[in-house]
Length: 219
Image (cartoon, rainbow, N blue to C red; front, side):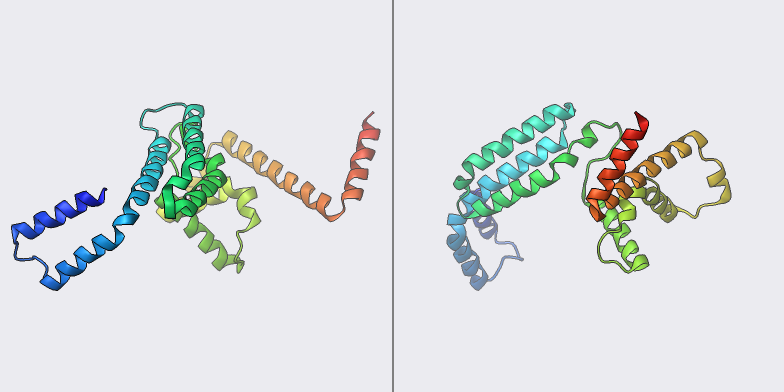
């Protein structure tokens, strides 16, 4: 919002002379504050316009495919990187926004690829935060548990469902066995991959020799 718009709104409120009109000292303070910060508003308006545009692209009201959304966001971020000096005093803030966007980019477009998958928002972030809090209280660890990475598709969903309503034996008995077996196989594969990585980090030479021996035995 331009500073001139704020000034006009403030002047209109003073002319109306409503009973809630601020005192003379408050009017003077507000006028002085507007004057003191007037030079900051162009930078704020430009940076806000960029961020608002990024939010509009990610929201994807036009229901574009995920690759198109990614290209549009990449184009905007490229323009912001080239012209961030135009943000003046907010140049560093724009740089931080670009850094965080690059960090989160791999997970920004899944909701445009998978049907009915909600986009990340404050409520979803709060949900994961609550889960991490319960994990810390249970395990005593401040860092996130590795079990979340391995068993997250089962543990996280079970935690969310159990908060909505108590689970009964009938709920467990009604599970699709085929999907249950597929989920167990996926978790088992995740656990095996993590175990192999741990063995390699503990003793890379021994791990590689074991692979060589397995390969030689299979020939």
